[in-house]
Length: 176
Image (cartoon, rainbow, N blue to C red; front, side, top):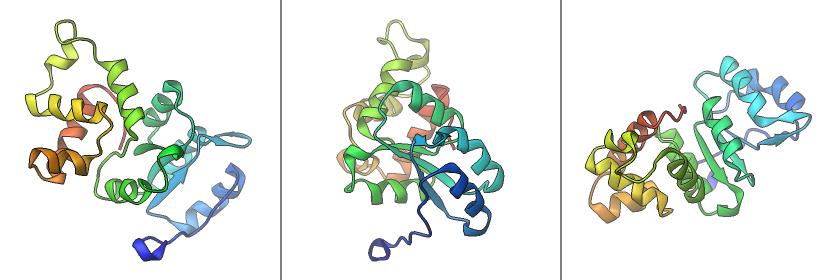
């Protein structure tokens, strides 16, 4: 939507159509569903990254299963947004990924946190987080977006993004 600063350069219903258009369209961001016939959108991630290293890929899907979330992030997705949160969060997610962030829907963030962190007295991973990173983890698990966290705690949006990148790195979540 050009009205909010974006322009759609194409829409494809399958991997074969998208593969042929990648090299000449050169989009800044690709919104990719997990389910793209005949394989999956996740199978396409390494191919996209090989052709378009600077293009950011955000999974935009109805699929909430941790298996898909983990696969997408490990194979190079820059973010993972649920269609159930659209359209309101889509523009914010695109802006976030363009600014170097890793947009995650609240429920996706909660799943990642729950899978990678145990109670504080049992988790060596949690011990590696700074107090501010723990705060950001908590707010993300409550479903807050980066902008809300920044406003609530009086810190810049870029600071929240930096904390989030460090958290994901410390937890071993692979993303851009």
